Structure formats: C-alpha cells, structure tokens
Amino acid sequence: MISKTVIIVIVFFSTSYSQFCNNLNDNDDLDWWQTAVFYQIYPRSFMDSDGDGIGDLKGITSKLDHLKNLGVSATWLSPIFDSPQVDQGYDIRNYYEIDKDYGTMEDFKSLLEAAKELGIKIILDFVPNHTSDQHDWFLLSANRTKGYEDFYIWRDGKDGDPHSPPNNWLSEFKGSAWKWHEGRQQYYFHDFSEQQPDLNYRNPMVLEEMKKVILFWLDMGVSGFRMDAVPFLVEDATFADAPLARGYTACDIDPICLNRENILKDRDETYSIIYSFRALVDDYAKRNNLADPIVIMTEAYTTPENTVLYYGSSTDLGAHFTFNFNLLTNLPNSNFTVDDIANAINKWQVYLPKGATSNWVLGNHDNHRVASRVGQDNVDGFNMLTALLPGVMVTYNGEEIGMPDGEVTCEQGKDPAAIKNCSTFDQTSRDFERTPFQWDSSKYAGFSTSEPWLPVGSSKNWLNLAAQIDVKSHYSVYKDLITLKKNFKKRSIVDNLSIIKVNEQVLQVVRQRDEADYILLFNIGNSDQTITFYRKALDYEVVVTSITSQRSIGEKIDNLITLKAHESLILRSAELC
Ligand code: NOJ
Ligand code: MG
Image 1 (cartoon, helix red, strand yellow):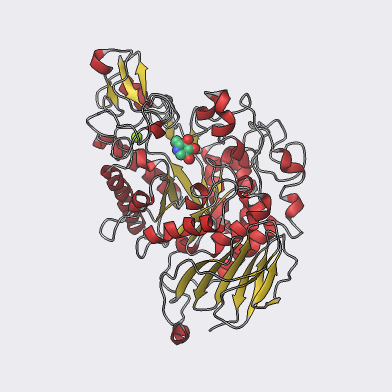
Image 2 (tube, protein in one colour; image 1 turned 30 degrees about the horizontal axis):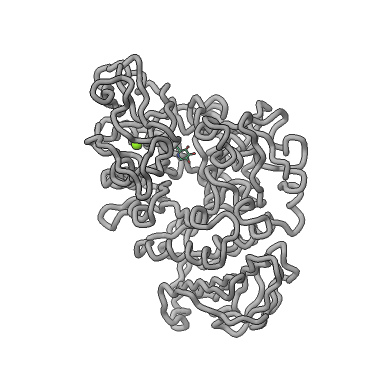
C-alpha cells in the first residue's frame, strides 16, 4: 500500500543554505565532546583479566582496541573505587582508591596511558549523593567525632521513639529511607540501600571534600565525570512528611506513591551544587592550560523541565550535558509506535535550552537492553537514529553488537534493590542488563576463564563480537554509523531536523546540513512497506543499511521505495558544497 507522508513536526532552525557553502570551515569552535560518542563500560562485566570471574581494569586495557575499532571518542566507567560492592560500586568506601576487584592504582594509570595513546578519553563515575556505610566519614559521624557529626543526615525517631522513623520518606530501593543506628542512637537517611547513607550537603565541609575528590582524579588525568543520582543531593530541611502522590491513599514501600519533588529530590540547591562542580572543573582546565575542556554529564531521572536545569545558564554554567533518557523511558517496551519515537525525540528537543548540546542515550546498566526493549531486528534502526540525531551519542557496552538481556534468577542476582524480594525480582532486577560482555561463543563468552559473577547470557551462542567481525552485523552497522557521524562537518550553519511519520510503521528523520541532507528511513514493523518519502534534494544514495536490508551502499534511491520488515537505511543527498 502506498501511503501519504505526514509531517508531524518539526523544523527547529531553518536558513537557506546555499549561500553559506563558500564559508564552510571545519576548524571552528565546537569542542571535542559536542559531537562525541561516549561508550559506557560496566567494569564488572566487561573483561576479566585474572580469572576471578569479575571484570577489571587490566581487562578493559586489553580491550581498548575494541573501542578504537568502533571509533568512540571517550568511555565512561561505572564506579571502580574501593567499595563493599553492595550496589556494585555505587557504595564507595574510599573515593581515592581503586577497588581490589578491579586492580590497583598502577593498573588505572596504565589504562589511562594506553587510552591516551589511542586517543580515547576516560570519564569516571562520580557518586556525590551517598557513600558506603563503611566509609571513614560515616564511621566517624556515627561516633559523633568532632567535625564529622553532621556529615550525614541524622534524626531522632518520631517523638523520640527508636522504633518510629522520623517521617514517611521512602528509599528509591523501597521501604523506609531511614535506618536506626544503634551506636549513635539515631536514624540516618538513605535515598538508596541502607548501606548507602546520604551525605549532608547542608554542611559546607561535605561539598569541600567532594571537590577534593574531583581535583584528585583530574590531577590523575581523567577527562571528565558522569555524576550519579544528582536530583537526590539535597532534601527538605524541615523533614516534613511528603504528601501522597495523586491517586494513592497509602504509601509505605514504593516511593512512587509519594510526591517527592522539592522534598526528596529536584530541589533548587541541587542545581547550584552542580554549577559549583562545573566552575571547579572549568577553573582547573584554565589553570592547567588544558587544550580540551573537562566534561560533566549528569544522571537525572526526572521531568524534562527539571532535567534541563542541569545545563545551567550563561551566567551559571552547569553540566555540559545531562543525559536524555527519553528514548529509554518514554517508549513502551513492546508495541511502541512511530508516534512514540517521534514524541520521545520532540519532547526532548523542545525543552533543550537554546545553544545547549543535545544527547541521546539508548541504554545503560539500570535499564533493559535495547534488543530486549525494542526487538533484535530494530537494534540497527535505533542505533541509526541516535547516530543521526544532533549532538552526543551515548552507548552502553554490548549495544554495539545488539546484546539482549541475560537470564538471571533471584538466587544468582546481585542487584540489592531487587533481591530483597524474589517475588518481584523479574520485574525489578537490573541484573539482566549487567551480564558479561559476549566476546565469543566459548563457555564464559571470552569474558573470563572461570564462572562469572553473573551468568553469561544464553544468546552468546549466536550473538557475540567474534561472530560479527567480518560480516554484515550489528557491529558493522554500528561502525559505519560512527564513521558517518565523524565525517559530518563539525559545525554546520544550517542544521535542520525534521521528524516525520511516514505511516504507522515507518519513521523518517531528516537532517539537513551544510554539506548534504541525511535521511533515516526506519520500518519498525514486521511487514514490508511501500512508501513515498519527503525529500528536498533530487538524488539520494544509500550510505548505511541495517542487517535486515538487501540494499547496497551507493545504491540510488527513488521517491517510491519498498522497505523490508525492520529495514532501516540512512540516505545522503548529493554533495551540496
Ligand atoms: C544510579 C546508578 O546508575 C545506579 O546503578 C545506582 O544504583 C544508583 N544511582 C545509586 O547510586
Ligand atoms: Mg540525597
């Protein structure tokens, strides 16, 4: 069936471009990170060098050639610091040491050096909201040691009752956010697990200490920080009960039933803290005459209005970018529609502050893998989408080969929030997306020589990097996309974006740039679709094809085209300049 093209939105900025062709200059003022691909490594599951079943730094170093081959600009590592590993490293015992599971400081320095030689920047995970309950500061605070009494958030029980938490606040990991401490005879507050007490940012000493942590790692040579759980940095100082969220009559386990905004999260003070971290890293780069800026990216699951506040303003700069999770959280896991994708994109672009750099996150260690969310056959289309959309592309390790979630039972599980209650483990666990990277089809997928900390996914037999190297594969498509993205002229005077619903099953994205028009055609469904599509230029040729496509690179594309089920293509117009 031939269907009519419907443009559902959107031209963001529009100029006529032929007059600019003579002025094109590629060496202009865009910084390295503004068009970069950031590749997230989950160190525990990436590569194990010493056969203990746990990924480590030497393992990462040994696989840097994989990152180089992909063509990514930088990698951000989930936490590698000394930790009891209750929340897989998001519970830090010592911010200045490498966890023994991952190696030594020497190993880290070798990793930095090797990455530098390959031109790959290293970004660390910075966890400012909470420490481990085994951190010295917490032990000192629990003892009321002078200077540390208020490093954490301590309160008496309600009406002095040790069996009654101070208020109704709930933890992101379910249940009361207050834990009674026998030694101090008070409750302490924890947004996450009870082994992750929240730091008290109303105490200026806390901020000073965390700034020292940032400076320490900058001196070591890292290129930036991914900042964890930032909406939770500050809580309401009156400790009043949070009101019930609309539609709830009771609330004692899942914090979703509380209206947390301004009480447990998203408070104004939070943004100022991030702006102060930005001032710190900018000042550091300036004092040390660094050629490249130090980059801050913030992790905030909140409303789009609140998310973009992390960018700051021209007078109060904030994060270089704050993760855009819309393609993760705004798409239903199955049965998503073209409208859903278009809305997820538009919803972000309309809130993005003028002049801010956009970014697109498809996956991470807290959400089901792309293949499991959108279907194996749609992986290439989604990778194409995030590569073509303007700004930064963020990839979680394994998504470049289209890894689906692994299979993990509650008994094998490690996610502290999920193993508390096996009856809901399948719905709540984040272990599925954390299973080892599938390098090959051997017993432990080439990840380790012994039983890994989480089981290897059964898909390793048919889905692994080794099997994708010299053939048309998710991996080869991903590499083509990075090459395409890198070949964009850095600065484009014209950069128009249109998101078009061609029909119920076909999405079209048009990006008009100085040098050419690029078009993504993405058939998300499982039947062939014959369409006519919106085009400005006369001639288009195929530059990237999905594995579901039979077309060849360089093929000329007519106005009328039949897309196979789940076929996705990137087309490029003839050179304009
Ligand atoms: C966000 C991290 O991505 C997640 O894995 C962790 O459990 C929480 N923050 C707490 O640090
Ligand atoms: Mg907090």
